[in-house]
Image (cartoon, rainbow, N blue to C red):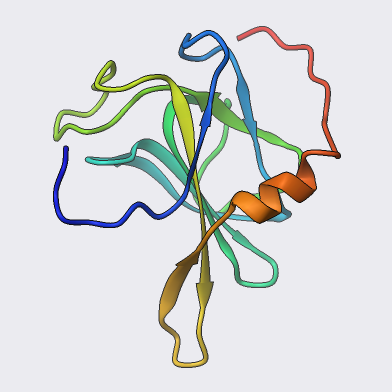
Length: 137
């Protein structure tokens, strides 16, 4: 898609490049603030934590059943599955890049302006808190 824009987040790649194979879990307790299609992000979910941090999960293959805007979710809860959606105005487009999760973190400054922070350091800290799942999708 190119363009003159910055990349606001971190990509978490899959081992096998198969869409829908890996679950995406929420990193926090919070509320689903946004869900649906975006041209660049494909199928995405935005979760606002109880402390006001916005977590952005993009390029999802599909959402977990019954996830809707306004619902409360918990840290570790499955919210969707990693995919390769996006980079198209046509909802449902896949295959424009390798399967991965785009994960972003947004904070709000004292003036109410949202800004992005690098999620990598937080992901490294969470790495030692691995959750083992057994699932069928």
